[in-house]
Length: 384
Length: 204
Image (cartoon, rainbow over all chains, first blue to last red; front, side):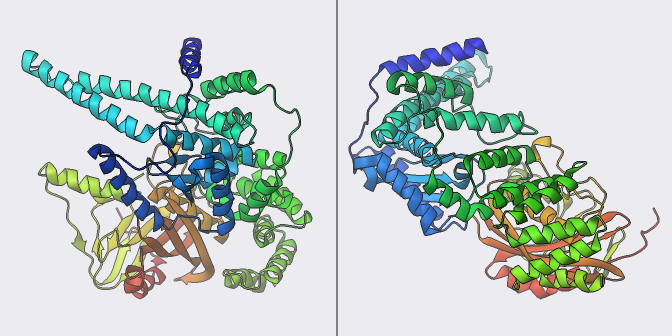
């Protein structure tokens, strides 16, 4: 582990010593290289499909919020990018060589501020201006061709068919990819700072991802955030912090609530967290809720989802915790109608019919058009 | 998870390997028993081979009219307390499980989260609506509707029927591509779901 960290730091240092800049000008289009043109055609086709995706978030305020951050970070490159916010509860963003950038909603629920969203976007923009998609494609193609030639030669000379060459090529490619990620981290931090965002956000967001991962119930087996193509989160947070501290000095001690970010989160919190709840990953959900309570998301909404998380998790004692959370949510004055309904269901289950009826009535008063009205009325009539 | 891509891949691999693919079989119209769950089958339904639904519970059945990617009518009988609606042993899948004291809203959520896993986590946003009481024979249960927005796919709509008897969950759902296929078989599928009732299990 120590050796891995040292290697990561050494690799980081060698890259950090170089001046990492943009490789292409704003408004870049491919030259005559056929492989690059082919890659662009593939990405353009992918973008046509993405435009039709039912999972695209089309709310103007979310899309404009992300697009404005992108433009501010991208500066002269602003017109090169099309921003797509995709409904996916996992943490990710991506960029193609053509400037199609995807931001998953899982990033929004994991960030603490606009600065943290900007750091991920800056990283993606750095991939674009460094031509990482194209170089990664060419690197893989060349290595696989040499690996295949080696394997065929080995087969011809010895009669042994073992894909040593291809496996070595893939290992080498993954290393190349990690180097690209580190480059994008470093250039991204510069873009972030140049745009007036807090460069310390670059490692803070990774610390939160690490904390969430530690809270996951099945952390070693869960898919998603970490892979062989990226530096480990711990290494990443460490080298970014070292570099930012050296280049920009220590951070402000005080956390300042980010009103613009909180407004977006509060307005869309229900669908963002319902997607998270549907993953059935309660350790991660609980870590996110603790984070949201700390940064000042509307308490009634956070408490409502605590109720949802406890109720659906169903451990011993969770029903009582859920009842308390729903009550706190309602007392906060901004609970969604479902807080009344689901509290009523829990009271029904606990045998407190009168309390349940009262909550069901309140639910129907607040949400008279509720699509499950027939179900609620059934309980109201049945228990009379 | 066995998503649509895996299904196609399985069929292609089997074809390339020269295997004889398991075949669909026509479901005879009339009373049809799946263990102690009985439904009235209408015409035109085809029973999918178990090999095509590897993540289904052993006693579950999938019927279809135009192919399971376009429409599927699924029966999951007798799920005991603590079991998931799918047969996946990986802990990392984080499947939701049935609990015998679940109320209608919780069965609705169980289904919602399960369908997210069917399509692959992150590949689908699933919502439910119109939760309503429904009698299945003499047993009180519920029905509700479902929508799934899916990556690289048409949207899906669905209808779910469920009841709890003898501390076990019996769940039937119809899920089909929207537009066209959902509406094409909607009334036939709902008729089958609404006909569901518990009968004495056949002696072994």
